[in-house]
Image (tube, rainbow, N blue to C red; front, side, top):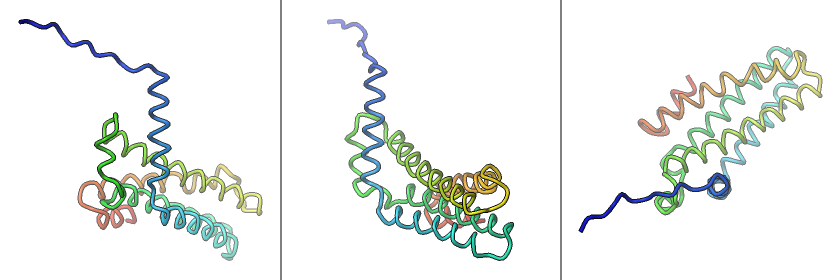
Length: 168
């Protein structure tokens, strides 16, 4: 008995979007709550410290450095071995485990960057010189670089190397 090729039906664009949004929504539920608390605390501390240091240039640098640390902590927290409290969930979803991981990473980075942008807006309204664009430019590059290096180190060897490499 001879059988023909198996027909594979690709999911529709609408179904793909719904599945992507559903996976992302579940990633929000699985994130460690301490990560959210540390992110908010770090960004609020950055805004407060930026306003109390004697020089506005120092304030920009302090805020940019704390944003980079918050984004670094998010990247390490999402990629570490304890990042998925329900590791078996990755195997039960109709998407690749790598897609679930990237979904979680995007959720965390988007939240961190949105919070940092909000903190930048607060600083500009409070009188930080240079404007919103200059303030975002001070933290965006270093934050993404530290997150990328931290993610690489964490996936390769573990959270200790990721945090160390990202902080350097």
